[in-house]
Amino acid sequence: MSRMKSFLGLPDATDKVLRLAKIMGILGPLANVIFTLSTTFFVIFVAEALGGGPGMYLQGMGLVGTLVVVQMVVQILLDYPTGAIGDWIGQRYIIAGAQISYGIAFLLISFVTVDSPYIYLVGVYALMGFAQSQSSGAWGAWFDNNYRVAMPGDTDRKQYGVFWGRMGMMMQIIATASLIPGSILAVVFSRAWVFQLQGVLAFVFAMAVFRLVRDFPEVEEARAQNGGRPDMGEYVSILKGGVTYLFRHAFVRYIAIGTMLAVSSIMVWGNLILFPMYYLYLITDVGVASFRTLLFIPGIFSQERSGVWSRRFEPKKWIPRFRLMQTCGFIFFWVFAAIMTFFPPAASSTNILTLYWPFSSIELLTLPVENIVPIALIFTTFVSTSFFGGFAEILTQRVLIDVIPNRIRNSMYSLFPTLATLFAIPQIALFGWLITIIGFPMTLASCGVVSFMGVMLIIYGFRHEAPELDGETWANGNAVLPPEEAAAGGAVEEFVEGIQQED
Image (cartoon, rainbow, N blue to C red):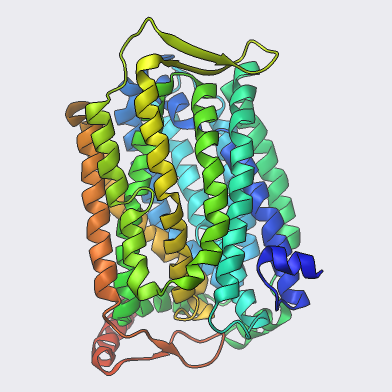
């Protein structure tokens, strides 16, 4: 038992906390297995179907950008309401529902071909947006609500930070181990077959979530004392409370908005830039997956160490610095822009390097020799920035766990990615069509500027005083306000109440 506590970074854990950590430590990595299998070729699969066939993914990227916008609009519309529902009835229902939605989406995407109508893909991406709206924030809210009840002695939240570092390590290991098998399955069977496998696994995972993800009795009692369920007035109160709380406290407002603006460019990177860029340099599914595996291996170490080393850093001073230097931060994007400017992918070459999977004819890596230098620079950039994002995330979690009331935690944790998505939509809509005009380097540099603006807002947020909760773990959203914020907070609350009365 003591070894388990030491491994999880929770030396003072009670039996309740240990059970909570074990469930999270099992379900989190399992989710990574299911959803990582096809990440290497998912965007390319859709882009090729829209572009006209194999190898024509660049021609379809503009339409993919529109689909991603549809997905994000659906997520924005439903993210915060589903988060509030999670606070209202409990996170297990929301998380299980998300897995079912993902399963249906994977099955539907497996039937996409060049002849599939565009409206079909619009529907699939809308369903994926619905799934994301349910899952975003729910895992963290469930864990944090129960952790605060079961681990009151961790006042500085350092053990909490170490645990999440270890969790990140385990999830990174599983994600890394899933990349190459997913691509090999796509080569041996087909990409569509992998999507169907993911759909079935998602349904099984939903059943596991419904059985294991449960609140401690204290959390259930606290929810019942604050209105119980299912009362629509309570739901509306939670829905209003999250927005009110965000605008009421400048500390939370600027840190949340700044963080989400800083990370919004990650969505542009993941949905528009990452895989087309990889395929320009690395050509094949297995080649891209193999390279991503190499990138993920240092990430395993950085995730584990981030939880331990972050204890040395003071959040106010270091969160902005780490956001600036993180993967998909300002420095990262500008370095990548320079790499693609000075070392563009070789259009054609007679010097091809090919490595095969041992004892098979499956190509593990195929690339022009001219691409070796930029690939090495890309690898170095990823590795050198991989620590900083983990530091920033854990330090931010340490700040937010004690400034957000449990009663509105799921809705607030869902509101944050809603903001990030809101910031990302115009970027994806714009860059999805411009990337073929202005090129990858200018697109990357523009993403860096957006991330830099977010860091400036975080710095401004830390100049304000943090709100203090009223002492109740299941606080009702009211916090002790700094004097200069009290008047503004009341005005916002009255404004929201006025809207409710009009409805």
